[in-house]
Length: 82
Image 1 (cartoon, rainbow, N blue to C red):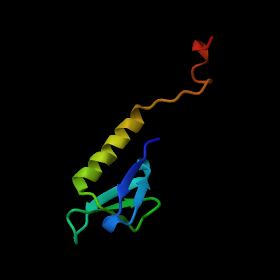
Image 2: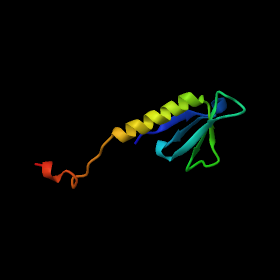
Image 3: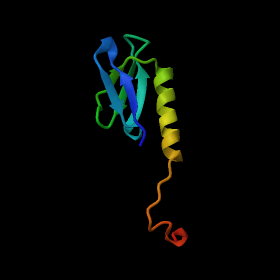
Image 4: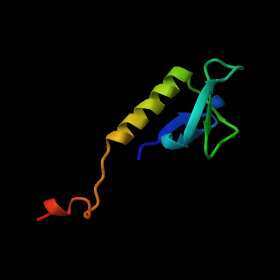
């Protein structure tokens, strides 16, 4: 499972997102260097101290890497077990 850690504005800490729960993001209209991220957990949005290009790139990369990770249960590969 991949997670995305993002700084909050004004050095107020860090927020961690699970990429699969992110529904979208927009540039903060009050500060173009910040992004508002909407998730299942934060439907009202969370403002992060990242420009949208940086955040969306991290989000996309996390989704790609999550799709590459393949896990098998013993039942799924029983014919190759010795």
